[in-house]
Amino acid sequence: MNTATAAAQYHDAVQVARSATPELDEESTSWLRRLASAGLAERQTAERELHDRLVRIALAEIRRRSASTPVTGPELDDVAHQAAGDAMLAILAKLAEFRGESRFITWAYRFVILEVSSKLGRHYWRNPPVTLDAAQWERLPDRLGLDPHQYAEAAGILAQVRYVVDTELTEHQRRIFIAVVVDGIPLNALADKLDLQRNAIYKVVFDARRKIRRALVAKGYLDESAAGQL
Image 1 (tube, rainbow, N blue to C red):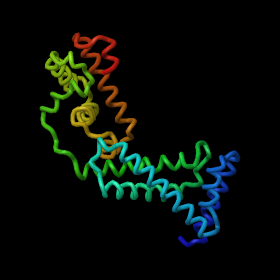
Image 2 (spheres, rainbow, N blue to C red; image 1 turned 180 degrees about the vertical axis):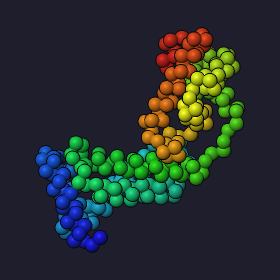
Image 3 (tube, rainbow, N blue to C red; image 1 turned 30 degrees about the horizontal axis):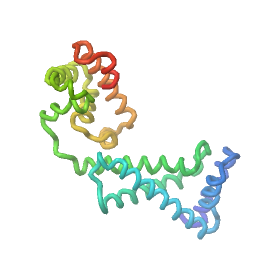
Image 4 (tube, helix red, strand yellow; image 1 turned 90 degrees about the vertical axis):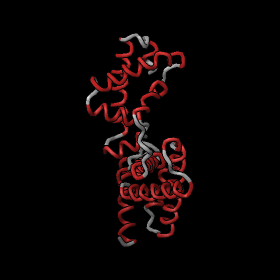
């Protein structure tokens, strides 16, 4: 794409956005104006500034997820820059879709967070942790949030949980529950692997936990108030 064509497309995108949102905030208006500038130097400066902003957002998000991802050191910077670069391309390609319902940077933030999730998910499956055996189930009382005084009942609780997982969960629920709760696979990694939205996986885990809670209450392992925290 030559410079003239790119400038024309950016200009058209900004005009569409402005016609749909006449009350853009000053900062958003500035971003759109500069990214659509007919002047190459001004447009490139705006793109560099936006890219730097996206890199910072990506780095912060990766560090926030540090407990659930093995990405560290130079590789962390690489993933952040890749996410920012891909987000940048998506943002420029979709400027016409910006409607001013949020600040421009807030809108752009969603693109880079999506790219971070996607890249961390792919990275996880390229470098998966060692799969734990059935002994991992023994740590379920911790992962289900049971209080220490309930550990004496852990064997019974564990048996009941496994019974519910084996007999009452659907195959889809069982697969996701074991992956997230038993094996501790990060949601973004599992979402990438199964090509599902994070919210869809969260709902499956929520529904599975609800079935388990009901079974533990019915067997007397939990009362109703404790079940609400499981």
